[in-house]
Length: 354
Ligand code: UDP
Image (cartoon, rainbow, N blue to C red; front, top):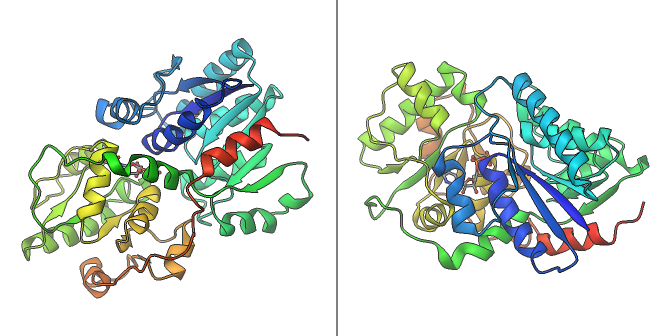
């Protein structure tokens, strides 16, 4: 069996690490990797391949820094040619980026089966590019690997049960990655205070809305000024916008860190403030409370279980952080599966029958 994996963005490398490790155990499965180039800085891409032992991509398309339409269009064209060349049995796509929808669409039009990992998630906010990508990818996938029960329910609500597709509640592959790499976590190269808050900000709904971005940075500045150390590994997009718009930070952010360093930061942080999808779950895996800088989340079970709170941007952010930051997270049952998602996925792909 030949699998063509489409990768492009940081969270996809982290998810793919677990699946590639599982595929490598199967002599009868070959994996070809296309890196679209969506994320290209060494600390946004290369470091994950090195640290996590992901096989070197067979193809690098080097498509980045373009508008959504231009990026997706160019990826579609290049991926189509490679699918024709490689003739895979499956095209595997992850999550909700432009690389995801481009890979799925190219494959589907060539009648190649599509497997979507992280299917069924919904934020119910069609202004988010991620929501558009994930809904469209689900529509053209043959097998939908859902990380949560909520995701399965979302697909049922959208009428997927009457379609000739397979829906598998596989658990969350990011949990596999945490379990695989937790033992190898390492301290970052910069000095760390004993206690700190871990923060990340990169989602378009925050970076492209200067009012929201300013509110977030003001809240982080205020926390820092009252003596709360903050570690903010800053995404290149956010760094560029802060600089261009002259939005001040009263503390020094750090560069994006590798996955092993991120696991170390999660282990030692007091709590997490983020707009990241993946980090919300990782905070939970490490028993840390998460304050989410978004109006909605596709990881709604975390909010339902009081492990996570969504920020209301009409209220003062700092005040909301202070209200919840001491909340304890009592690790729950298996909200995200057992950490054997990669095994389930490979088994399903090998044994697929229409
Ligand atoms: N991450 C990392 N280094 C960083 C910031 C994030 O390794 O400096 C990891 C994080 O632990 C998580 C993933 O990147 O596994 C999340 O990616 P991101 O926040 O870029 O995307 P999202 O999850 O929002 O799609």
